[in-house]
Amino acid sequence: MTPELSQRLSAAGLDPRTVENLVRTALAEDGEVDVTSMPIFAPEDTAAGDLRARDEGVVAGVPVACVVFELLDVACETKVADGDRVVPGQVLISVSGQTRAVLKAERTALNLLTHLSGIATATRRWADAMEGTKAKVRDTRKTLPGLRALQKYAVHCGGGVNHRMGLHDAALIKDNHIAAAGSVTKAYEAIRAVYPSLHIQVECDTLAQVEEALAVGATSILLDNMTDAETAEAVRLVAGRAEIEASGGLTLDRARDVAVTGVDYLAVGALTHSAHVFDIGLDFT
Image 1 (cartoon, rainbow, N blue to C red):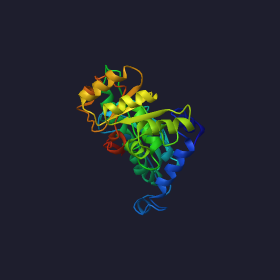
Image 2 (image 1 turned 60 degrees about the horizontal axis):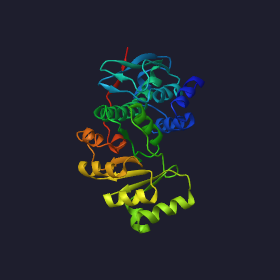
Image 3 (image 1 turned 90 degrees about the vertical axis):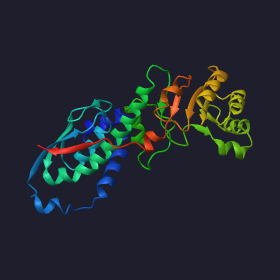
Image 4 (image 1 turned 30 degrees about the horizontal axis):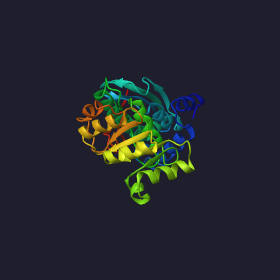
């Protein structure tokens, strides 16, 4: 990987070594020999092409796709930046190199670019639906193994906000923690005793749990599967003493109705676990 591309990944908040290892793993899945391209093209044959959007949306993963091409010695020229809105027919990346190498890189690059752009596009739809409110759409840990950093990066490109990256950087007291500990208070105090300054979020199924969470000192509350009316009442109860995140059963059609209740975030697992791929193709020129 060139120092320039490594710097682009670092500037995006991605670890270059992690991305390179992921790309190498993806390329290895195709095996050593392309039994289609090898008999057709000689080693000296070259080709050039453009990766073009075939839909309208937000692009994410451009430098990640470039890692694929660079590792196979294919020249890669980017025409857009992650987070840009693109339209059908727009060139995202131009590539050139040995024909065999371009074709070997094609599917892996597109798999990553279309998936991440799909997440960014879906996120942008949620952000647009809530425009004018203070609420922001936030992702979850419902990610594919090995792709969490990239998927959460794509959410950011689409205008969303990242939740915790794992179990290590913030605590989230959920229903099973509360049931096993005996109460919200017991679970919260147990964590606070070990981690005095750790960010703790409390998932609440009822307004009574919201009141208990506030009483114990919680500054972040997750409202699970509450109606719009219950959510609005929870906002009233909290009265600015804690940040509030709505979750569970949320749909794009409901996004604005939930946002105007006054919550700070909407948690949407579908951003990463159910986003449709964004249609992009590589066309030889």
